[in-house]
Structures are given as structure tokens and as C-alpha cells.
Length: 205
Image 1 (cartoon, rainbow, N blue to C red):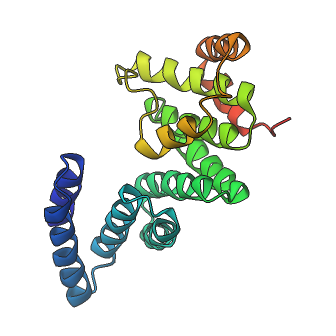
Image 2 (image 1 turned 90 degrees about the vertical axis):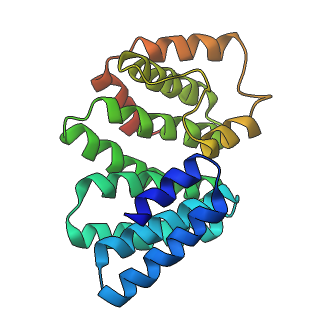
Image 3 (image 1 turned 180 degrees about the vertical axis):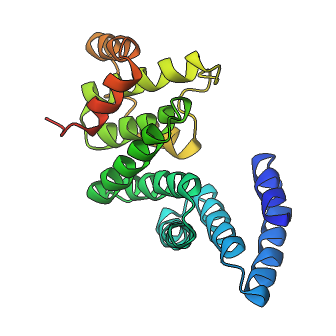
């Protein structure tokens, strides 16, 4: 399907062809009134906006995609879009919206038994904490996410998994360092997945 191929093209840096495939898919979705395909189109349009560092444009596209996937009852894609809405909201400084979406995302992943997938909202919660200046909390959550990614063989060499998250961490690079934060990150790596989820869902202090 062209929408899946568009994501492949984005991942491999061929944005022009990806955009063409998205336009083609949008035309087909509208002609066929295919809500699932349209949900995918809005998701990829949000990805496009995010890659171009336009979180204000990405957010409503991700929210439109999430609404369609909710109507379709697709819990897996809802989790992906809740993560995306949360990341865009964090970049825009809407921390309450970000936290709400990350909470739904991590709770759904945990309820579905996807322990490996929990690493991604944990990492997003870490970015949210850092964006709010809660550096020890962010370090602990990041360590917990790294431990789960390592357990399941998901690379941690590039730091945060997603460019938008790396951008958030980079903004606070001068503050997000030091012995106390190294210790907090190490402490996070020692948490069980259940402990990490509980900590992420706990109110920031």
C-alpha cells in the first residue's frame, strides 16, 4: 500500500517521493471514503510536518488521525498517535495535553502486555519532564526506558529514539547533566518495568 511505502521513503530520506505517495493515498481515501486509509494519510501528513519542524501543523493532523483510529477501534494505532500528539504538544509547551496523551499511551501498552513498547512512552515522559525543568525525574525515566530498550535488543546508541525527543533533550543539554543526574539515570535502569510505569504515572513533585 502506498501509505506504508511513504513511511518507508520518509525513513530513508526520500521526502519528495513520500509526499507524492501521501497525496496519491489521500485522493484514493477520499474517493473511496476509506476512513482507515484517511487515518493513515493524516498520520503521515503529521509525520511530514514534524520532520519539517512544524509541530503546530503536525498536532491537528495527529489529532485527526487519532480520532479516526478511535472510531475504528484500533488500539495499536491509537497508542502510536497518542505518543505523537504528546510529543507535538511537548514541543509546543502544552504540557497538560502531552501528559494526558502519554498516560493513555503507556496504560494501553501495559494493558496489552507490550512490555517492549512501554519504552517509548517512558522516553516521551522523560522528555516531558526535561522540557518542564524536572531534570532528576527526566533522568530516571530515561534510564528506565533505556533498560527496557536494551532488554529487547532495541538500539540505544543514538540516545532518544526519535528526532523530536532528541531535540527536546538537546535544548536542555547544558542543564541535563552532572553527577546527580547520572545517578538518577542509573537508578532508572534498575527499575522493573512495572515500577517504571508506576513512576511515570505518578504526579511530578
